[in-house]
Length: 39
Image 1 (cartoon, rainbow, N blue to C red):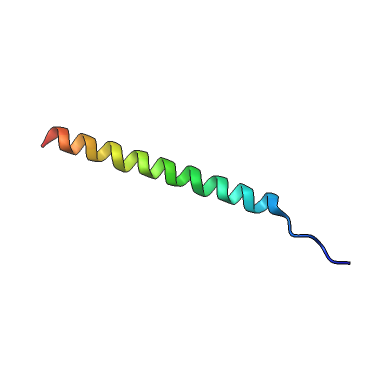
Image 2: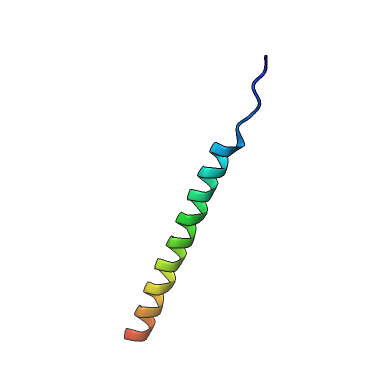
């Protein structure tokens, strides 16, 4: 009996990846804004 592919595990990893990408973009954008204001 073949087991169907479990998409829930992939969805969780994609959610984590997207959240990490958003946090990284916010940190990089915020630090660039601070640097541009200071300099």
